Length: 284
Image 1 (spheres, rainbow, N blue to C red):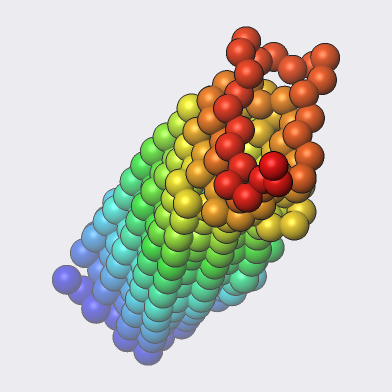
Image 2: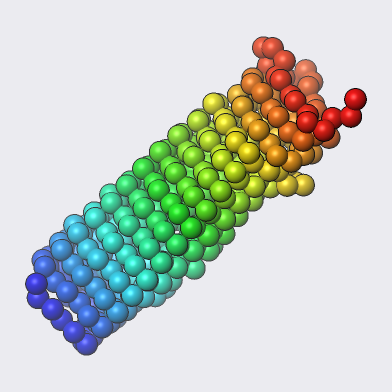
């Protein structure tokens, strides 16, 4: 493998088509497509300032690097990435990629990031300004995830999340086969129109959660004070270890909670038969 150390490059495509290349302490200045159509690339302690540095790359390792704001849309149409101990300031990262492993990564501007990607593993990752994160992505595994940003995980499938804190309006909208363990989910309209969403030991807050869902399961979860009008038109099997402000027109199933302040069943209910609602601390 060829190694280039302690140098600076700029302009258009300085490493176009490179194979088996290692960059150490290299700065890529303003320009476009520095490593386009490359394979088997390693970058350590590098700074990327120009646009589109890694497009159509097959096999690359990025360690202890920085992608500045100028390196927008840096990793697209590529495969088999390992990124560790890296800060990504550039928006719109990771598009139409297969095989992404992120560990100890910080993305302060994660807007429109991780679209149409598959086979993603992320550990100890923090993302902010993360609106429209993970649109139409699949086969995702996450552990120790911290997120601020709305409309996340829309239309994703085959997702497993552990130990996360997710602040996101409209999270998990239209998803299929998502399981979340031991996490905090805070935001309006959680899980609307989802199929087979499974929440285990999660704390949930935000108005109108978990509506229009099919095959929805909650195990030993808790609800915060903003969780009103929950489960509208949802097929649900839920065990809630707290009270619930209000439940509105669930379609099918069973809900167990400490208590429910208000149960709404009106002319808009689509339930074929009454949903079983059990209140552990109900006043007799």
